[in-house]
Length: 417
Image (cartoon, one colour):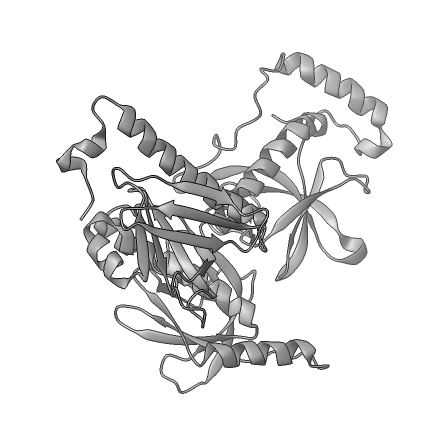
């Protein structure tokens, strides 16, 4: 039993009106409950099958002067926080979607342990916990859920969906993609019943139109006094169908691309195995030619570092499943180039270009093909991340070479072609 429930059963009046009575009852509650174990309360005790967390909180409901704090049981499933009037209810009263949300504590009201969940697509939700321990437990759970959704490229936002038959034109829908790769779309952000769903596993993203025209359109939209957006079209290609969508912003379409790319790789990775990628991302690579007329200019490249200590660079972003061990020959054929850092009898030199024109550049010399590699990241922090990964790979090579029985000396363990 919580402190608030104990006080309520004791016949106490409102806390703010009877602070002395509250203090007395709180002390009595502590004596009955016994000393604290030092561990926070658990959200798993009330959770049932398929539920990630469950527990009681207070929710501010109503409008204007008719707002009241209502006690509700909250159940977390994935990134959706459902609330019920009673644990025995089969249907929730509402839902708070945490993907893309944030929360902050509120101290300006009379309500204790008060916090708010804020989301760009629905109204602010005011919640409160029984005590500080429950407040810490719930806010930690919510923050971890928000962070996990961002890491997994889960998505929630407005999108325009073309009718499957093409008879009714475009419909504005609120789309939610969970970590399992299922896209559900709703008429409103806080609807409980979805209008339909799509399985994004093994799907691909296809941009409609020229990318340069899209960027020009985005700039015109930002500079327009009306502030109206455009139509940034794209297809989601699935095994049995192709569905067309558009967003009103170029950046929104890029977010959907990242989401579909991530979810589309789920099934392929589960079928083929785990990717060998250690680090990946866009960099600017300097050309390695000898001509002064354009061969040494900087070009944007997609860089991939593998567990086998190989650096690949591509003209465009590639799927992670391309670096499943069984797909390595395909990766090499599609790459613009690569360096084998694991090759024997090869020396390497990694430098941070602090004295160069770009203070976020780095250079590698060596490799089995005896070629240099000079690149710069978008930021200094990005450069340091790349250097850390590469230096770790080189250190592992050196330690393996000093070992009496290095793995690289065993032909069965070698991944070199």
